[in-house]
Image (cartoon, rainbow, N blue to C red; front, side):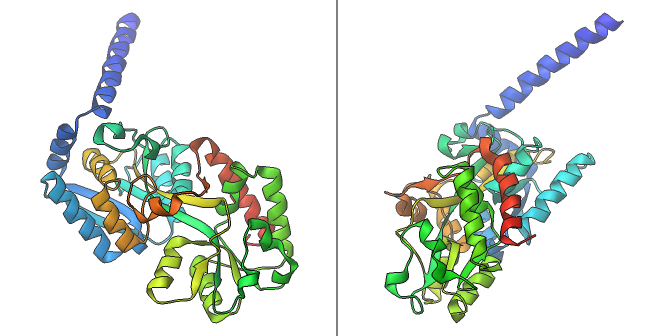
Length: 343
């Protein structure tokens, strides 16, 4: 009986392996047919996408694929908290309430190390191979460009930083400099071109200036009010949002390399409707979807030609997060948070 049981188990495992390979290599027509049967997509994405952005994407998606899929949008108030919730549910053996999760590459790193994505052959759906990340568990759909920022009405041109080291000038001491709580910005430089030793030294010197600490919106507001003169980092979606309000906040555009955090879309392990989720993830990388992401999220992808992000990236050195550095960045982000005084 033991031998028969082992043989039966081997057959089942072989069949399961074949089924998984076949599913991940499905043609787009098969995925569309599967999505049509599923009928619903539970989408988790940034709250900045807004109540208008999600329906606009859903309508364009349905039109493109001839579907009538219902897309339920779940805005994120706190990505770290939401990822922790998914991890907790998985540990309890409970299926996720969201099928497709759109969060940053750093947050998806936490899911990846716990094997909480459903891998898929996104290239078969026309996705640029450079956009496929985390062992084919996610696709990059948008890039945040991250540089120092300042108020051009309150900072003299001669004082505008032209390199990262200019942020360490003693003239920024005692509250003239703002530092965001997004300490993973510095960890990305450590895992990339600067290395850990140089970056850690830089962060310690930054902390010695006793900067004003805060979240992105708070630091942007302090810049506008003239309470600080410069922010060590800021996202381009914040800069764009301010530009639309005819605000004087701008990037210190000569500084390089440019840190680029990415929004990834990934289908969660245990998702009840994976076909719809994989298809929607791939759709978010298309030129038509990028228009809506830029309009409503304020971001677009460097991997899609013609987008604002792709144009911005030309001729610049960009720092991307690679999956093999996910754990290092997670560790250093916490370490740098303590050095700067966030913990």
